[in-house]
Length: 100
Image 1 (cartoon, rainbow, N blue to C red):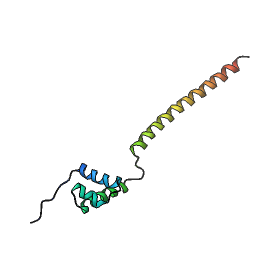
Image 2 (image 1 turned 90 degrees about the horizontal axis):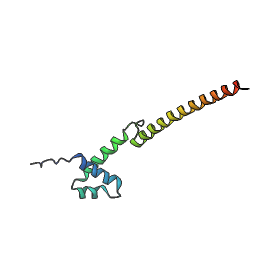
Image 3 (image 1 turned 90 degrees about the vertical axis):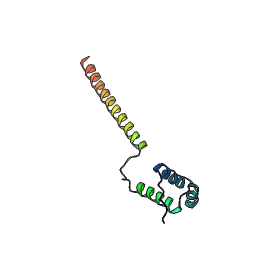
Image 4 (image 1 turned 30 degrees about the vertical axis):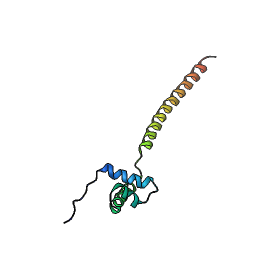
């Protein structure tokens, strides 16, 4: 009679994958510590690697997205400042030409 299949929540799986990826410990040792089979943990790690490998190259990370927004805002601000300076120079030139 086959045993009942155990279900693991996503947080538990993510913890196992993180330990494997961030530590120098062998997969078998991490699996033993977590109380899962080596094959099960290996599948979790492989799925995680595939998921990250198939992410589109054009997709930005959160820090990149934040930097892009900051740079766009800064670019807009600098453009406005440049336009104001150009207008000031034109007004200054017109005033200086009108006076002898």
